[in-house]
Length: 108
Length: 108
DNA sequence: CCAATAGCTGCATAGCTGTTCATGTCTTCA
DNA sequence: TGAAGACATGAACAGCTATGCAGCTATTGG
Image (cartoon, rainbow over all chains, first blue to last red; front, side, top):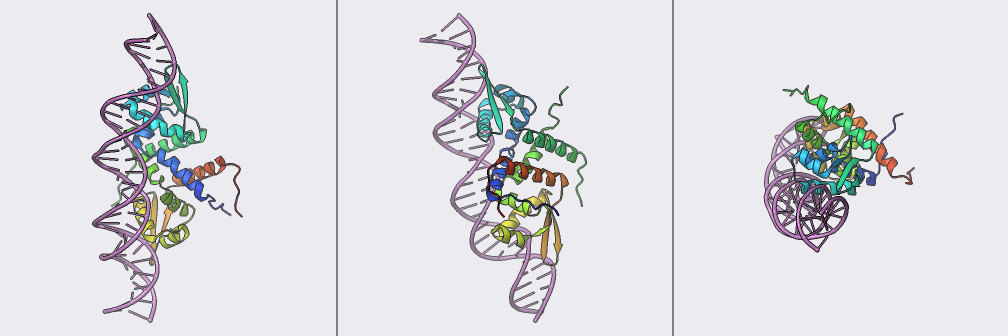
């Protein structure tokens, strides 16, 4: 017998909130930028070619949701994806999308 | 050597779009409602206690993104999550969220 | 103290989006 | 044919949100 999906209202909302945080391209890039190793705010802004202010705005949300963890070292603050589960899920999904794109065929 | 980000701009946008579709609680409930087995629009509306119109609006987006597949049987249309990868990811994430909120009371 | 660097935050706003209501379309049955 | 059921869709609206700008804190170093 297959286990029916038991997830209550609050858990659905929490899961949706998680997805919401990853649903903005800029924010998702930020998450991916510190997926494997910690990255500073300035480094991310530089690499993604967006303002440090915008990066900070997004980091605020990601921090609040505990999706990223901050680690201050001197003047710089390094961020990294804390949850291993989220990390592996993102890695997995990134691979999935990358594979999917190369064989995309539009059905008539 | 560690695998650096193997995902380009377009893929990030596509992945973000995927997450966006799962980022609304109502829409996520709809997806979860037809995760294991096909469900009709009316059944989902009834079960989730929302209007069939709203369900249809969400289904339209999910269909367009090929996240759900439609199967007409008579007057009714059944929807189901097509991609096995997405399906397993959602099952996994649902479990993750359920475990994360420890100390909770299980119904039944 | 001052200056420079790195990052954070309040405010304003244009654009997006989830929902409702009314109507349209497709299918089955009398 | 007409009616009813099941679903889809268009328009409108209220609430949300990503972004830019300006100013702010915090740390390092003289």
